[in-house]
Image (cartoon, rainbow, N blue to C red; front, side, top):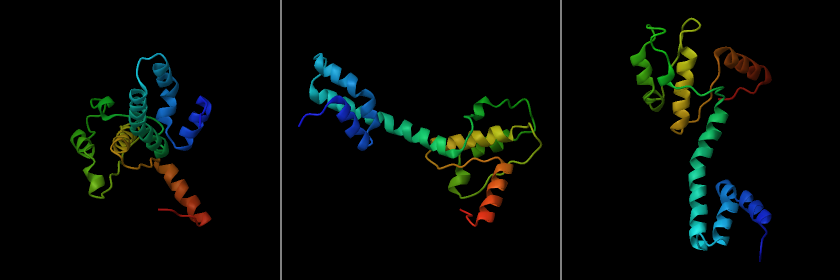
Length: 155
């Protein structure tokens, strides 16, 4: 049974092999131009899929986290607010508090770096495979209030 390139792409999509879909045409051309044989091209397609999966998973986790932007602790201007506890922030960046099932709460006036630090820690957690839900305090309170009214309070 022979499949067209479009049918093959549709079949790969149904199998959730998007990494193969992305490079299928290029790999087919390499075989057609005798740059590699079928087995080499197939091995490359499999590797393309294996390479794409971790980055797709990371992007999906980041998207689901609710993080509005990507932040990093190395981009924080520690000199701007010398009272910001750098040592404590770097300790939190180890994410040991997550493994210990502990919480981290940042409290302080506006503009001191709380959100930047929280977003950076959340991004680290996403990168290390944790599921993250980022919300600003007012947003979280509104969501809890709405969920209580609807009788749909979730974990």
